Structures are given as structure tokens and as C-alpha cells.
Amino acid sequence: MAAITRFSKPLALSHIRRCLCSSSAAAAVSDESNPHVTSPFGNYKITRRDPSERNVQWVFLGSPGVGKGTYASRLSNLLGVPHIATGDLVREELASSGPLSKQLTEIVNQGKLVSDEIIISLLAERLEAGEAKGQSGFILDGFPRTINQAEILEGVTDIDLVVNLRLPESVLIEKCLGRRICSQCGKNFNVASINVKGQNGNPGISMAPLLPPSHCMSKLVTRSDDTEKVVKERLRIYNEKSQPLEDYYLNKGKLMEFDLPGGIPESWPKLLEALNLDDFEERQSAAA
Image (tube, rainbow, N blue to C red; front, side, top):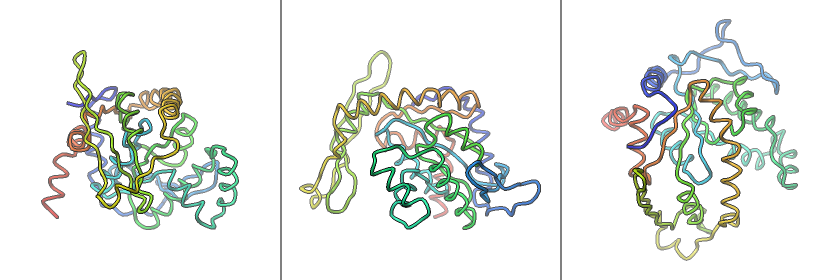
């Protein structure tokens, strides 16, 4: 069984049931009891609504290479909520002629980090646009990453649950070094075959490679930053910054840590069980 710590399961289950009880609700019209959000970066028409009247609003955290995007995307499809990755928002803005495009281009070309203010502005605009389309809820992928970002985010919207996905560092390094991209179709694959034996009472971890079809095999390339030195440094920086953020959400009673027991076949059903969604998936399949 995958380990879940620092978040009481009875509390988690009751909270999730409350969030899921009206998963198909449309965006509510704002009134005096549901004021629009006013943030330091502009006025956004994002209505704060009771969890029983909307879908889930979750955050997925985890080290580089852990698979945040994979599991967040799967849950997004299952629950019918948008999967929002702030990296995608930045890339979309860069490719557009939006108001921040020129500023972002200069930041990226100079190798600087995108400021919290810009990230929150893009996120708030995305949430506002989603509400206008009748979307309810969201799953944020890899954001916030600092306490400052988390505090700013609280001024924009409410977060129900923070899921922190975990893998041993040795496995993360193997996964990152095994990543490959097809230079023609752009799809991501992984050639690493991971088999870590259990030690000191901890279970082993096995992950089969995610191999490409034969027509992509000769076109695979490795990301320039997927070297052992760079990967280890990314993990070091992430771990250094993530602990205060985890403590921040722990103190708010919103943090659930989930140790991935293996690849997708092993981890997905365990994650659904931890989130009390295993029956939900079965009901969705039966209704399809």
C-alpha cells in the first residue's frame, strides 16, 4: 500500500466527498454573498464558492520527473475539471500577441525567472476565462512552488487539497535520464527500466519503460538538460524550496503525501483509493 502521511484520511475523505457532491455544477453568478476576487494584480471575476457548490480545486506537487502532469491530467479527465499547468500558460502567452507576450519574451531570452506577479496574473485570467465558459474547479500542476506564491494564490482562489507525489531520488534520477522526445512528432517517451529492491521494510519499486512505436524509435532525442549533474541540481533546489511549502499546507490541514508504489499501472489505482475515487471511476465507466 502506498504510504500516505501528514494528512488524516478521514478528514481527506470527508472533504473530497464534499467537493465531489456537485461536480457538474455550472459557474455561479456572483452576488453579495459570493464577491468577486480583488487581488494585488488586478480585479478578477473569480467567484469564491462553497466547496459543496463546485468541483474540486486541487494542487499537485512533486519533484521534477515524478509524474505530476501525468496523474493530474488523468484526474482532470476523470473528474471533468481543467488541468492547468502554469508552464503551459507561459508558453501559450509567448506564442500569442497578448499584453504580456513581449515582456515574457524578454525575460525568457535573458534567462531570467518569470515573476510571481506574472504567473499569478496568467493563472487568474485562465481561471476567470474558465468560469466564463461554465467550468467548475481545477487541478493545478506544480504551482505554487513557494510560500509567497501560495499566499498570493489564496488572494485569488481557494485550494481544497494539496497532493504531494513522492519517489526516491535514485528513481527520479533514472526516470529523468531515461526521458526521450521524438524529434518528429514531439511525443514524450521513457527508455528507463527501473527495478529497485525493497530495503529496511520499504517496498520495492518497478517501472516498465514507456517505449515509442517503431517509426519513432530512430528519431528519439534527449533533452539537453537531462544530464545527471543537472538533474541532481534541479532536485536539490526543488527539495530546498519545497519543504517550507509542504509545511505551509500541512499547517492548514490540506497536505496529503503519496508515495508512488511504481509506474502508472501500480500507482493509478492506489492513488484513486487514497483519494476515495476508486468507486467513482467504476461508476463513470459503467455510465459511459
